[in-house]
Amino acid sequence: MENRITSLFGIRFPIVSGGMVWCSGWRLAAAVSRAGGLGLIGSGSMTPDLLREHIRKCRAATDRPFGVNVPLTYRYADAIMEVVIAERVPVVFTSAGSPRTWTARLHDAGCKVAHVVGSAAFALKCRDAGVDAVVAEGFEAGGHNAREETATMPLIPDVRQAVGLPLIAAGGIATGAGMLAAFALGAEGVQMGTRFALTRESSASEAFKQLCTGLGEGDTMLALKKLSPTRLVKNDFFRLVAEAEARGASADELLELIGSGRPRRGIFEGDLNGGELEIGQVAALVRDLPPAGEVVARTMAEYRERLRSLPEL
Image 1 (cartoon, rainbow, N blue to C red):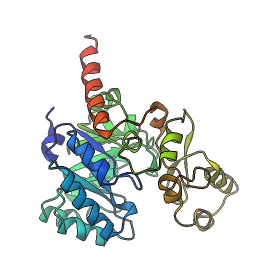
Image 2 (cartoon, helix red, strand yellow; image 1 turned 120 degrees about the vertical axis):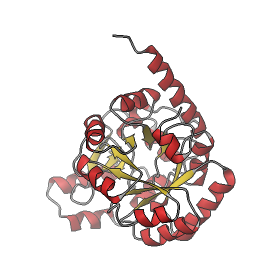
Image 3 (cartoon, rainbow, N blue to C red; image 1 turned 90 degrees about the vertical axis):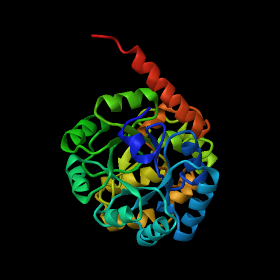
Image 4 (spheres, rainbow, N blue to C red; image 1 turned 180 degrees about the vertical axis):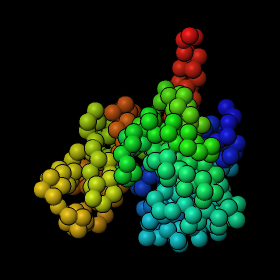
């Protein structure tokens, strides 16, 4: 399959694994890249030295292109970028913050740059900043979301109309059928987070993975809107947050309630009650934990099958 996304990143299939904290280490990135997609290492939970280790292990595990996701508001973002440039990582996906901050320097280092957006207005800013592609992510996605709370279905055509950049759809996509729907709306690639978080190579804890494969409709919800809207599993921690928000807790009170290390405790260490469990709505469709390469193959097979079966009108 060839289009602007596959050509831009030098990959076989326009499928990207999200760079998720505590899930997206070198094993997952390498597995997705070996299967023909674009694997991303999630740097948002790593120190610069740890990221360097993951980059080198990923490069040793595959000769295919891979990338690093960098949240620009992360406390180590500047040092992380220096590692990315020094290690000559071919692709960087940025999120949060301003795409102007690093795009030009990354281009000078030979990196392709994509930025995650939650609105058409932000996509226009990305175009003006010179990014190579945008990832339009609807608020079905797990973890941190845009404040606009725009769902994927209206977001993709809105961004497509606003900018002519290569467009990757994200949020609520875990299947070939979802990929076909995103393409019908104007996307040229898909980024899947939840589906790849729930694979064998994901570095999330087995307890977290097993819990998420049993989730149903309505078992996740956006919370922490006074800080950064975040989609969470409804566990004991979520209920504490919901109660605090219902009584009008301030941002400072919410920060105190969260404390430090909640996502690590929940996702990486498997504290299913007191941890912060970030996963997308589409987890309700996921019932197994296959190898990541199998997810790529399944997605492409279903995409082709659904495309062939479309009725002629």
